[in-house]
Amino acid sequence: MLAGYSTVSSKAKIKGLEKIDRLFNTYANSSLGMIDPEGIEALCSDLGVDYTDVRILMLAWKLKAEKQGYFTQDEWQTGLKALGVDSLSKLKKALSDLEKEVEKPSNYEDFYTYAFRYCLTEEKQKSVDIESICELLNLVLGVQFRPQIDSLIEYLKVQNDYKVINSDQWINFLRFCKEISFPDLENYDATQAWPLILDNYVEWMREKHS
Image (tube, rainbow, N blue to C red):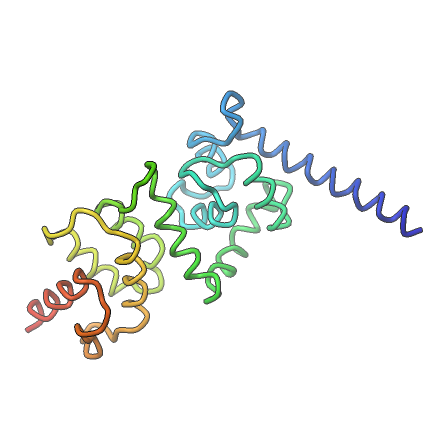
C-alpha cells in the first residue's frame, strides 16, 4: 500500500511540476529560456499588481532571482514549489502570504539585503545610484518608517557628497530606522559605528530643526 501511495504521490508531484512549467512557459521568452522584463510585466498585469509593487520584489526574493527583471526556470520551479503554488490564482493569493512571511524579523533583514543586491545589475558592481536608492527605500521601508524615509530621501536628494550608496550604508539605513528615536534623534551617537553619511544626515536634520 505504501508503495502505491508513493507512486500516486510522485505522480502528483510530477503533475504539479508540469503545471508550474506551463505557467512558466506562458510568460517566458522562448529564445532566452527565461522570463524577461516583458514577461514579468505580463505576469504583473495578470496578477493585477503594478510592476513596481513591493510584492514583486518579494516574489523575486522568494525565487532567489539572481538577475533583476529575469526569472530562470530553475528559480521559478524552486520558488513556486516553496510557495506551494502551481497556478496564477494561487500565486495571486500567495503574494499576500508572502508579505506576512517577509515581515517576520528573521526574514526581513534577509529581504532588505536582497533588495540591494537585486539592484546590482552590472558585473562587479558594488554600489547603487542615489536615485535608485531613494526609490528602493520608499519601496521597502516606506510603509514601516514613513517619516524617517521621507526625511532621509529629502536629504539624499539635496546632498552632494554621495553619488552612490554601498551595501554597508544600505544596511545601516535599516538599523537607523529601527534604533534611533525620530524626529528628535536623541539617542544618535556619532561616536558609534555609523557610516559618515548618517552622521551628515543627523547634522543636517539638527541644523534644519534648530
